[in-house]
Length: 115
Image (cartoon, rainbow, N blue to C red; front, side, top):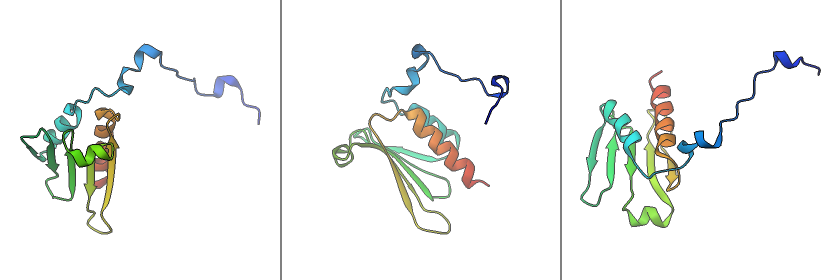
């Protein structure tokens, strides 16, 4: 197939210095700020773990930086979903996953579930 180069989309390659967001700083703020803004119940423990539940109780998010069981499995974020219809499912994110990525995942989840 011959396509004129003027009809193809431009290739965007961010400069290396623009990729700072690809590294996790181990800060939960992007996720917790999102959930707080959505009216989720958020509880922190004396051990510095945080547990959040959606207003309807169908979604749980755990920030588990001090949970030894989670760390043994390389997990710091645990998301559990119980759909109105269907089986429950879990998504976990490791210690090197940026919080902005988890926030993006949760945004997509919440946006999809509100349709």
